[in-house]
Each structure stands twice: as C-alpha cells, then as structure tokens.
Amino acid sequence: MKKKDKSNGPLQWKPSWDRMDTILLDMDGTLLDKHFDDYFWEHYVPEIFADKNDLTPLEARKELLARYKSIEGTLAWTDLDYWSEKLDLDIPALKLKINHLIQVHPYVVDFLQYCRIQEKEVHLVTNAHSKTLDIKMRRTAIGSYFDRIVCSQDIGLPKEDPEFWARLESLLGFDKQRTLLADDNENVLQAAQTYGMEVLIFVARPSSRAKILYSEKFPSIVYFKELIV
Image (cartoon, rainbow, N blue to C red):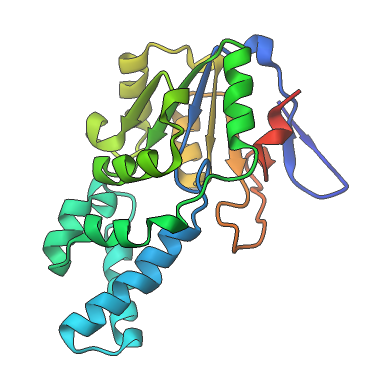
C-alpha cells in the first residue's frame, strides 16, 4: 500500500481504483481550505469576545484557545450551539459575516467528478456541526457530489473514536477493505486504522496559509489531483 518517495519524503499510495468501491471524505482542511476555520476561531471570535468582555485581543485569544483545547476531540468541540451558549455569542451569525473566506481546495471538484465517472460511492463524513455544514454547503455548492453527508453528531461520537467507524459502517454499509478515507487529521486516520480501514490518505496542506506537513504514518497528498489516474 505504501512506498517511500525519496525525492520529497512523503509516503505515497498508488491509486488502485478497481479495488475501491467507496470514498469517504472529510470536509474542513480536506475538501475546504482550513484558513477560514483557523481565522474564525483563532482571530475573529477572540476579537468579538474581547470587545464584549473588556479584554485585550491577546487576553481573549489566550483564554479561548485554552477553552478550545480542553474539549478538543469531543462532540462539543465543533458544536456551534455549545460555543454560542458558553461565549454568549451567536456563532452561526458570526460565521455568515465572513463566509466569503470559505473556499474549496484546488482540484477538489475535479476529483469529485472523477469519482462519479469511476462510479464510486462518495460520502462526506465530518465532525462539523450541522449548522456549520449548512453554511459551507450553501457557500460552496459541492453537496450534490455526495451520496450521503454524515456529521459526527448523527453518529453520536467524534471521528477520533474507533467506534465511530463501526457505527458508520452499519449506517452506510461499506466494505472497509474496499473503502478510501481522506482526512487532514492523523488522530482520525489512526482511529479508522484501529477500526480496520486499510486505505487511509492524509491531506498535508489543510490551510492555504500553512506549509506542507507530510504524515510519517500515512500516505500523503497535497492536492487531490494526485489521486486522479
């Protein structure tokens, strides 16, 4: 499955589409540029929170980053209703104010069209809250490419939990030996691997503003054109 590319370092997967029936794709950082999320949670929300609570932006950012970190990897982490209540802010409304920053990564649409040509089942599987999903699907118009869209709140567990993948298999009915999962989160890929999924692809540049960081554990891509053969 894996081979070392000595020219640039990343582990690679040679596409074997005849062995794949189902494609599972993460949203934020994988299909969509994570710059929006990074800017929203690390800069925009702290600025609003600082004004509301008579804090400096630096104080607000430090406090909020600590709060985010404390529940990372749980369902609450991406729950917009949770954060609206905890921060006394209308988080969905704030997202809409800067939704022009929501962008699809290069070659994503090409890849989704390619999967259709190859007659694969394609599912979007995300930890994002349903309200975030709605905002982003309306902004990007890529929802029609998926046979089904599943949020972690639908499953009752975050994707970082191996049991998530067992429940997803029961829901979607895929063969884990003939399914490809692409995600920009190594913890998610590790959970899927523990569950028994074989073809796992790491997205090495989730944000257009960040440098490429290849995984040492999983085959890596920068753009989905690398999987089109």
